[in-house]
Length: 60
Image 1 (tube, rainbow, N blue to C red):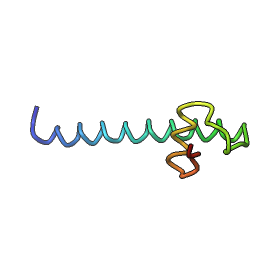
Image 2 (image 1 turned 90 degrees about the vertical axis):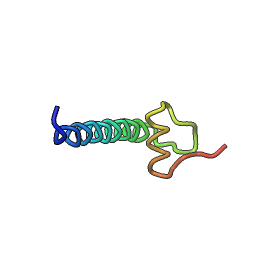
Image 3 (image 1 turned 120 degrees about the vertical axis):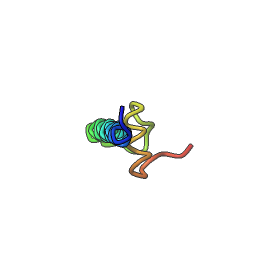
Image 4 (image 1 turned 60 degrees about the vertical axis):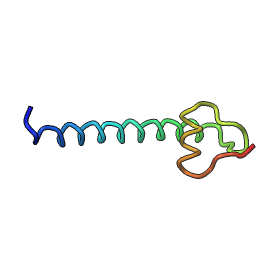
């Protein structure tokens, strides 16, 4: 493997991580849209992550 392949592989892995994270946040946001209640506990971990990322999380 040449030295030019390593940055390409690292870039592809990081890109895949970003895309997966984005999809998880989107799924969580869609779950919140159906419930229309941000005062209660999130229905799933994806919804909890979406709240944390967007700053709409419940403390306590």
